[in-house]
Length: 241
Length: 241
DNA sequence: CCTACCGATCGGTAGG
DNA sequence: CCTACCGATCGGTAGG
Image (cartoon, rainbow over all chains, first blue to last red; front, top):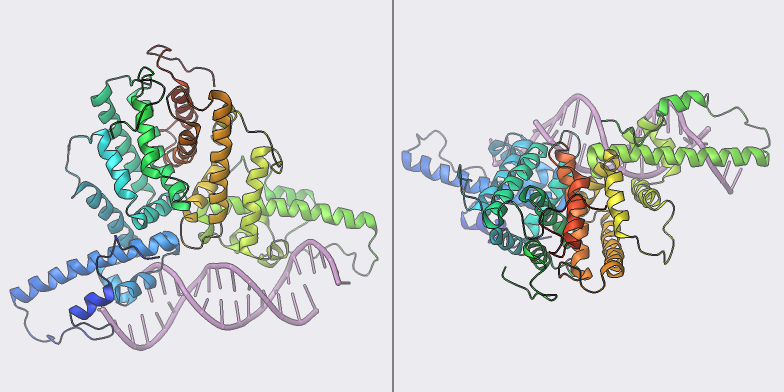
C-alpha cells in the first residue's frame, strides 16, 4: 500500500536529486575541518532525513503494526541501511515515540501549546473529514491503538494520556457550547468518552470497509444527535456541521 | 496478566487431576487393539485439549497480539509441546480462526443460528456489562481488531464481515423498536454504525484506563441518548437498561 | 552511515 | 490407517 498523502515525493527520486546513491560513502570531506556553513547544511539534511524516516515508519506500521514493523523495512523504504537508521533513532522505541509526536504536530499545526483554548466541536468534525483523506495515517494509528492495549506496549502510555486529554478537551468544548447539560440530557462528562469512542470506532469500520461506512457523515450524524433536543421536527436535514 | 474469567481452573491443576504429566508418553495401550469405548474417550480428550488450547491462545493474543503470539508460548501455557499443538491446529492461522469462532459461540450461547431473530437493544447493553467482567477476552479481541486493519491480516475478513453483520442486526433491532426514525431523528441505518463504534471505541478507553472510563455506564448513556426525544425532562435518571 | 556480525527466536516439519 | 504426541532441528529473520 502507498500513501500519497504521506509522500509528496518518492524517496528514490529525492535521493537522485541530492546526488546520493544508496551504498555510496558519505561526501569525501573526511579529515577536512568543517565550516559553520557545512555544519548548518548537515544539520538541515539530518532534519530532513529524520522526517523522511518518520514518514517511512508510519507507512510500515500501517502495513504491519509496530511489533511487525522491522527496522530493516523502514530503512529500505528510506533508502538507507538499518544502521544508518539507528544513527538517527537509537532504538525502535525511540522511532515510535518520534512517530507518535509527529501526528500531534500535524493535527494541531505545531507542538501543542500549553493552555491552548479548547477546540470547537466543528473542529473535530473537520478533523474527521481530514482523516478520511489520509487513510495511511489513520491505519497506522488505528493499528497502534489496537496494539497498545497489549502487555507492556511502548505506545500504551501515549494513548492512555491522549484519550484522557481529548476527553477533557471535548468536555470543555461541550460545556462552552451547551453548559452543564446537553439538549439530549447528557452531561459533558458523559458525552466526551462517547465522542472519542465514536471517532476511534468509526475509523476501524471505515478502514475495514470504506464502501460500507461513510465516516465523516456518520460522525456528523452523531454531532447532530448530541445537539438534538426533540423539538426540531422529525426529519432534520444535514444541519450545520 | 492472568485472566481468571478465561481459566476457571489452572491448567497445571487440570493436568494433575487427569494424572498426566507434561513430558510423559501417552498411556501404554500400544499394541493393544482399541475398543470403541477407548476411541470415544480419546476423542473427548481431544475436544477438551482443543478447548484449552483456544483459551491459551486467547490469553497469549491478549498479551502480545496475533503477530506477537508464538505457538511456543501457547503450547507452553497448555503444557504441551509446540508439535503437540500443531497436531490439533495445523497452522497458526487455523488456531486464530478457531479462536475467533469460539467468541461467537460464547457470545451467542452456541453457533449462530441461521435466520436467528435480531437481538433486542438491551441485550447489547447486557453484552457490554458482561464484557466488563472479562477484560482478557476484550483485550484479545481489541488487539485483534487493531491488527486486522494492517495488510493481509488473517482476521481482516472476519472483522469486516462481523462489523457488517452487527450493523445489520442492530439496524433491524432499532427498526423493530423505533420504526424508520428514532426519537433523536436519526434513521436505524445511520445509528447502527454509531452503536458499533461506541462499543468498540469504549473498549479501548476502558482497557487503557479502567478507573477513568465506566464502560457499561457510558454505553447505557448512549442508549439513553438514542431513545431521548427531548420531552422526558432535563435530568433523566439512569433509566431502564 | 557502511560491512560484518551477535544471541534468540520465529513458524513449521522431519522421523518415530 | 487413525490419534496424540515426542525431541530435535530446518531455513530465515528479528532487533540491536
